Image 1: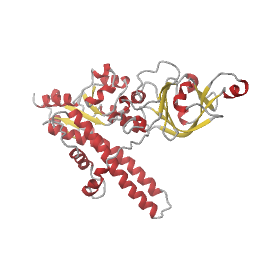
Image 2: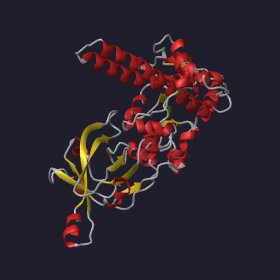
Image 3: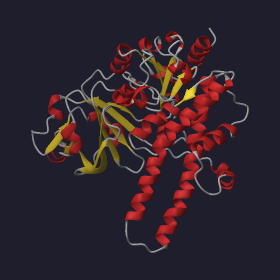
Image 4: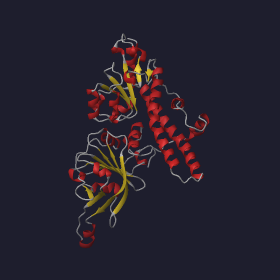
Amino acid sequence: MKQGYLSQYFEGVALKHLSAVEADVNCSNQHEFNGVGALRDILGEPPDGKVRFSAKFLYLTDQDDEPIVEDGFLTWYDSRQKARLERNVMRWEYRLYFPTNLVSQCAAEGDLLVIAKRSDDTLIAIVAEKDTTIERQLMWLFGFSDLTHPGFSVKSELETEQDRIGFAAQVVLEQIGVEIEEEAPNFLDQMLDRFNGSFPKTIEFSAYARSSIQDLSSHDDPDTALIAWMEREEILFRTLEKHLLGEKLRNLTQSGIEDTEPFVKLVQSALQRRKSRAGSALENHLEQIFTDHGVTYTRTGVTERNLKPDFIFPLISNYHDMSFPQARLTMLASKSTCKDRWRQILNEASRIPDKHLLTLEPSISENQTTEMKDERVQLVLPRGLHATYTVAQQSWLMDVASFLELARLRQNP
């Protein structure tokens, strides 16, 4: 196992598209995956009898922010083992069974199935809806460009350069419930002293994260700077969060409280803080980049119907000045991840028909980017994420530097 690679979290992974028979939950209460012989590379040769692996099942689609999750098991065995032992019939027939559950009830023919083995001998079984962004992201994460044959495609080596965990991989791993373990303990005492042992405002924390990286400025390379700042803030936040939450949990435990409600509220508060902080951090770092490059803007200025786009260029006062040329106005929405939420920006600034959307989400599906084009939404991503998209998509994508050039040109024609 190597730190910073997929092998830190998985011993092996297998992918396939579900057939009609595999997705049909009406056949029986026990269901069998086909073409499973290749799974020996990650599940091993079944010993005498059946092996039952504890498993976490997830169903993911672009329409829902949270996956459907259910704990269960997968049963792995060789149905010909007894015949070999008793009658010397030299045949092998491997089978992988799973029970009906919430995830299998959602599955449909053509959906992507991922079986991943964790280091603790448990499995993650993920079903991703066909032709969605999350399907493409999972294939990209595990290094599969195509799945042409009906059986499983397997990888038991997850320490190549392709398997290095960068920012894009972290985004996908978090969507399947894998907690990134990287921390920055050397900064903990400094953060506790600076922020008085509590969580600071997001704008303060973003500024601190930027200051912790020496010799990095957005002047030369705004695309690289944005990713580096986001990565550093994420690591620093996890480090501080782990310490502060640990203290609160210990205090609750030591107080002898039997009611579970305070524990539930603490966890819910932590999850809500994580979600809101990521979006705010992205906007904070973008503000710094705009300032560094002399681009004027208004953050969350009010437009029609009291809507508040993330950024209006040059200024919100220009937007409301009907004598100001429409062609010189620009709107930028920023979303750390998109899913189907990108459509929310379509009516945020009626004077600006062509919208720009900056995201950090890797490998959005061609179906989604085609819809964005049709709705006159231009996707903007840091240059380092462009490689997660298809060649055809890359020719259309805009990077941060190009967006800055456009905003400056419209600001000072």
